[in-house]
Length: 76
Image 1: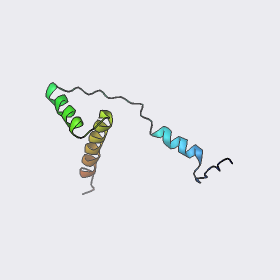
Image 2: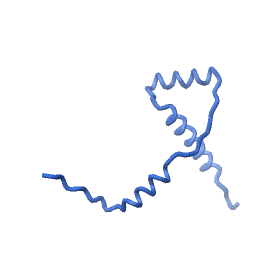
Image 3: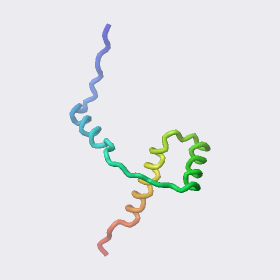
Image 4: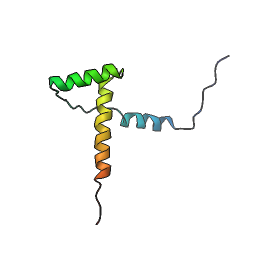
């Protein structure tokens, strides 16, 4: 007997649009010196990080977002 499809109640076109908005299409290049890359490699080995790109992305974005939140414009 075939399974019934789940109906989530969310428009599939909306889900596709949201997925397209999250697509990463911009590139930044980082250069590290020998001691910096050794520290990153040690961190990844110690904490079993396999995706360095995700590590860099999370670290950079957390710093950027926290700085923006701390230094938001005020009226007075």
